[in-house]
Amino acid sequence: MKRTFANRGLMSVLAGFFLFGFLLLSGNRAEAQTYNWMQSNEAKQVLLSEVNTVYGNLQQLTPGTQAYNDALAHAIYYRMIYRKVDQGGAVEQSTIEALNVFSTTPGVATGAFAADVTVTKALKQVLYNDAVGLLTL
Image 1: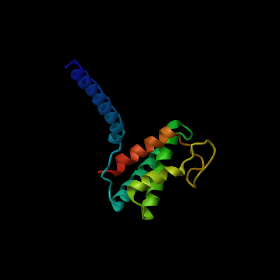
Image 2: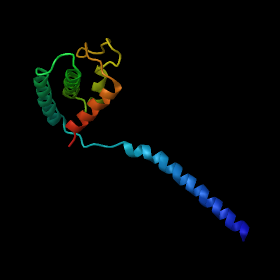
Image 3: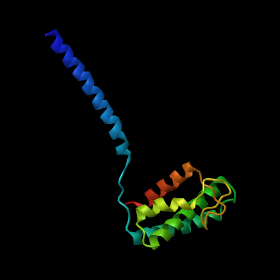
Image 4: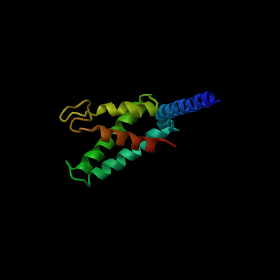
């Protein structure tokens, strides 16, 4: 009887480890969210409006400041998303691909718009999150 109880106790511990491992592996999947993206025509209207607003705000900021650079990065990013959507790309894919216009190396341009804008990985994530908030329903 003592031997059977010990085996069951070991099986409970083993089952607990498997359950814990499963929870750890499935935790990363919970981060991947699906969004309800706007249709292309609606997204283009929203992007055009947002770009006009950001460029209007840029005139009130001092060039070279952090606020100015962040606003400029947003305007460039939204323009690039607009361009990709206008060329027939899906809204979701365009938000990802448009980030490639920015260089993370100071002084190195990767696209026609980003000649003097360097964007950190953290700012790229902020740009993407802002675009998701702007272009999802």
